[in-house]
Image (cartoon, rainbow, N blue to C red; front, side, top):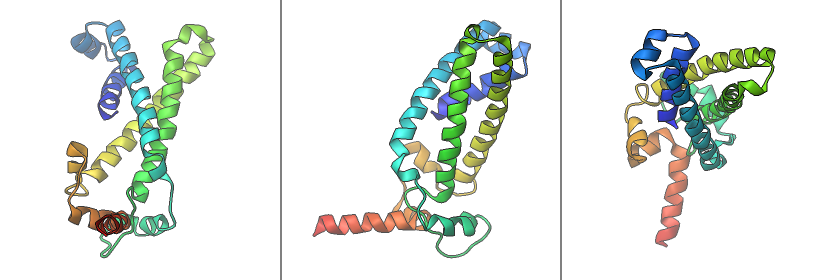
Length: 189
């Protein structure tokens, strides 16, 4: 999903700003760029649906998420525990943000891929919505990437191999860590 998003972001910006030099330099023609963008969009749609299904249960807010928001996730120097389950409140907010904006991008992108089926006025509005939401989605992903890597040392590992240390989990997702410990103790018994 991330790889298709990066490809869509780069190709989408080239298309949105009609950067002819980059269109021809990287893709040979505007048509090749458009086709590449559409195929990356299909991959994005499929992987977005997969992500929705995979993380849906973990994306619902719990009562302790209010405390995470009140403490700003610990980003502004809060000392002590900041409650979080498998997903913290920020990750849950990003899930819903990317789901809503990803759905808008997917539907509008499909409409633009088949723009011959729509009136010109509909295509113009759809194109504008697609571009604006694309800018907001790119900005949100960049902010999420910063908060999930630079602002939280050790978090990058999750993206690389899908695992974290016990210490990291206990510090960043204490509610989830305690639930895992309870399951481990129950399995040992």
